[in-house]
Amino acid sequence: MRALATLQQPKEAIVSRCVAGDEAAWAQLYARYAHSTAHFLQRLGVAPEALDDAVQEVFLQAFRSLDTFRGEAAIKTWLCRLAVTQARRSRDKARFARRIRQLLALEITPDSECDEHAPGQAERLLQAGLSQLTALEREAFVLYELEGQSGVELATILGCPEATVYRRLHEARKKFQGFIESEAQK
Image (tube, rainbow, N blue to C red; front, side):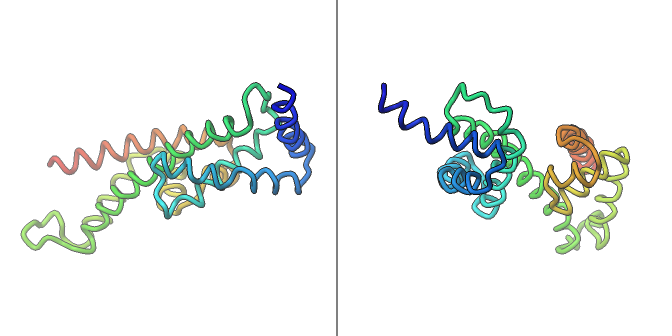
């Protein structure tokens, strides 16, 4: 038991130092857990090209909320929980990006047998889909999905909490996807 307490003490100390604003402690925390977080995210299905960004998002979330960490679980367990949420966001973003690319591929490779795939149709579909969104949903959707901004960046840009950004984004995705699916069935 005493050996376990000794092993846990430096980890608890590093959390306290991070909360106090010690930049060196943040660097140590990142150095200690970034590799395992990246490995975990990869196993959760985050694409290799999105892995670095996903790790950064996990640690940004940790930075923003470490002062609420109660210590009831190990810091690594808490980081894993943040990674699960981030992996879900990353997979959703990748899936949606594939759909957008498929839509925009209509613009690049028009099907000569089908007029609906004429040049400019993809852009018209995109604009028509965006017009289905409220102004606030459209801002979140365009900045996140089309411009590649992060949730944190959107919260700053839009002047609202990050949770509000993701709520707007969720609603925008549902509406946009519904519109595109209805158009595909025509």
